Amino acid sequence: MAGYFNFETQRNPSTSNNYIDLIMQKISSRNLILFPFLIFLTAKLSAQETVIVNKLNSIIKPIKALKADGSFDDASFLAEILKKKEVIALGEVTHGTKEVFDYKDKLIRYMVSNLSYKAIAFEADYNRLAQIDSYINGTIDSIPISPEYKLLMNWLRAYNKTKNSKEDKVHVYGLELRGFSLTINKILTSNKHINQQDKELLQKIKQTPFDKIDKETLGRFRTFCVGLPQDLYKKMLIQLIDNYNNFIDINSKIRARDIFMAENAMAIKEDAPGQRLIIWAHNGHVAKTPLYKRPTMGMYLNKEYTDKYYVIATDINKGYVSVRKVIAKNKPMSNWQPIYYPEVNSTKGYEYYFKQCKFKNFILDVQEAGRDHELNLFLTKEKEMRMIGGLSTPVNKRLSIANNFDMIIYFNETNSI
Image (cartoon, rainbow, N blue to C red; front, side, top):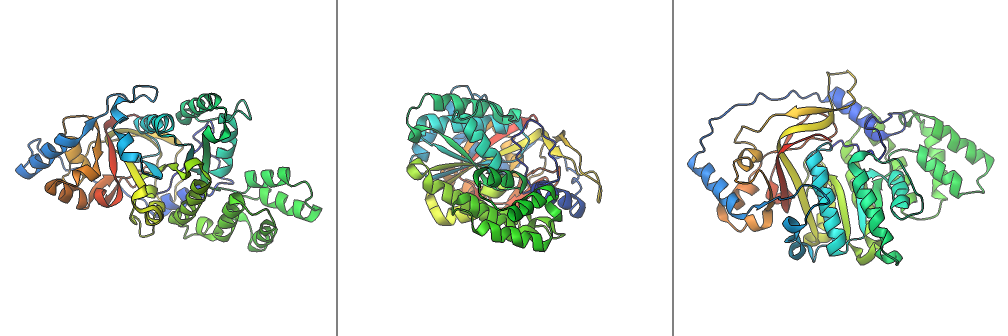
């Protein structure tokens, strides 16, 4: 899923040195997908549909408070479910839904405060998160942060101020490097004895648009990077260099990212207090099976940690979502803007059933539902589910909820961030 996590103040990122935007542009020109016509059905449910909705109603739990600083009462039941988990993935159905961001913020506050999680990794640039980590740990006093993340980061900063021990403080991480400019700044700052020839090489790469670096220059850059200290940062840098063509040529493959994000998540987890980790990423990345003909990050993590890996996905029925609109084939994308997605009126979609439930916003424990025969069949059978990334299309993905997610946080109607 082509996603863009921007921790700066503007949701209009420059395309010059960030491979995510470059890939999104290529996706929009190659894979323009028109919105399907909606078939509006009568409100009356069939007998089998009524059985499914009634059974869902018997196990779903209402979301009582959406605000992150509200009560944890509707999330307290998670303590028993999550107590033996090591990696908790918080998925998002879109990158631009306010309710999803608010509730994920709330879940993180709950897990930090009540379950002692101290490491949070985002589907985002490692360099950007390193700056924010300095902010939440008091090394710097201010940094530009986009509004949808600012409340959480300020809360984490306040939380860390109450902790005297380094082991008790929370840290945030990015799961990948997304360009060379900030990386080169860090290399030049932390390595004072770089010779003039290497400095000129680094400056050349820094000043070249990400997708315009020639093979010979990239090879010299790799040779230089091999000599850097062995750590996760060096590993991420080599990942990006060795897979450069996967991100910039005509056959750019966004799914090439997942194996690297999984490897980096494992490395971050191993160094985290208690070796436990929260991951913030798109549903399409944290899912446990291949959704787009390539393994997902969640598939690798599920193989490594089995039942210690737990996925809380989010879902929506209708509402406004902030996306970059696909205008037309071979036309540039729009900036981030709110687009309205109408309700799901086809029985082919999971949301058709969810919207009939007694609570407008609710939590569905997929594992608990699986103990019921009819619900197990319903959640195992592939249906369409909302799957909106950084672009306005595609909108849905055919999948099995039971085979990919352990819990669903559902919102019937949403607003854009």
